[in-house]
Image (cartoon, rainbow, N blue to C red; front, side):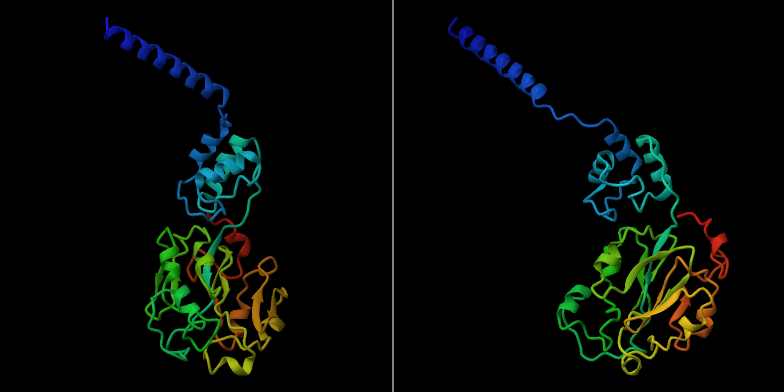
Length: 281
């Protein structure tokens, strides 16, 4: 009897505490919108942060709350956006796929260094050391921070020390753009291969001593463009992709070889912008 009474008391107390916890869980339950797990399942699960949210879980919740659009995920692209739109009972306007592109070709043989850097081999670390060792203050530092930041292995360092982007692997998550301390990488329409491969904002006479293949702001490309899609901003040619039809005339006219075809293969054809729109992201 001396053992039965304590055991019974403990059993009754356990039952009471358990019932209390069960009741509390019902009272204080935070109900989740049933669409959130469905949207989460439609997302690719990369958790890259390219959408601006810390992960796919956060993005799914934001989409259901109406704080983010159905096509907010750059990795899932059209396939994920269509599925999420179906869940949300919405429609998604078709948008042009974009990819990351490098705006620099200042390798060591064309862009001399003004100093030697012996610190951590990271672009951001080198940037804090007086802006880096390149003579051109706007050029790629070449230590591969963008390579490390890419979760899809879409970037490699070329033999000339300038990053190379595989446009088929690139998901336009934007991690490389956010990582580059020199703003050398940006997102551009994939169906338009015209790219300015320079980020130099020096005035013309100061360009060549620091980079022999830099833009000198001669304005020839802007004058010759039949669509008036090129302007000179801060001594650098800038393309308005809404106007550009990828005719390729600017490539022919550029004296410094700054304007190039970033995707020179049969998939993207110069002067065939409308046909190129059919590219899948």
